[in-house]
Length: 356
Image 1: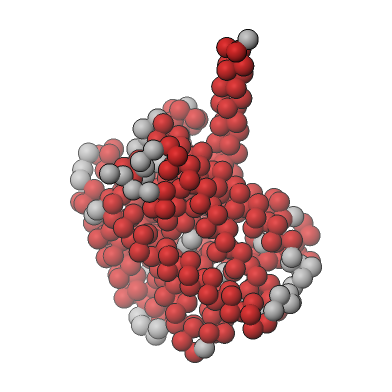
Image 2: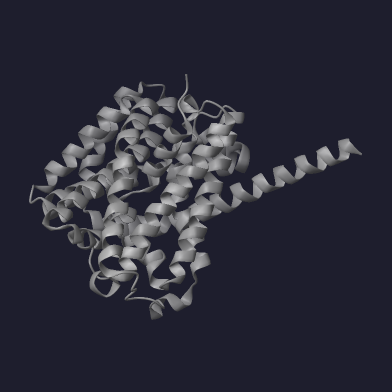
């Protein structure tokens, strides 16, 4: 018996909600700079996430797709797909290293534990999860994602209750005048679309039917939107105090008391973990199919090789690699939505012709 849409939604959420999302940095940079208009941006981004998730998961079920390579080749053709695949593999590997580096940063900065222990701990737990393939990822997300949702909503609610909806950054900041909340929402979804598409195209084993697939995509997008909204509201309220802090939401979590910062540090680490296993799985699944080796063996090698790269440092890796792949994600997002619309339009016309 295959699992419900809730499991699909939790995997989707767990893939997207990485260090940047949970820390509050991404939400501030993409939406908070626009002040109250950032709320419109979050709503629009949530709709885009839902549309993308529903389109990809329904097509995965209909066409019995088992990997992102099977998904992108019919869309873009063999030549372009080969180039894109190399870029995607690089993105996933570097993304995995970034999450390992982030784990080290959380350990040293929040718990005063050596960064190497944080890196090794994340790598080992990722190996254990990847050893069980899709079932392992699904199991981890079923456990972790509800905790992430509750924790983020709790922190946001406490800030709102104590301070009221008094935004210290109501109209936005001057550097946001070069863009608007619409383009920022599109860029944000495209920025996250590569890892999302990679993991969504691997979920056939846990999709029961097409209705589950569509609901999983829609509610995954809604869940991301709800969490982003609570982060945005709390950061808009506290903007003047936290806009320059590396992890703004830990400052917001202190409204819960002294223990709030530690609790949110755990939330941040878990968000890194769910994103790390998604990136790792995308790489391991593809590599094992190409060289015809077991996923267990590839998972072990993959996690070991990533450790030295993770020691380069969290901020260094983020500043170098994240902007580079945003454009590829935008290309994929637009192409997928337009292609689906054209397919729908063609089907509508064929049905209309038959009726005549």
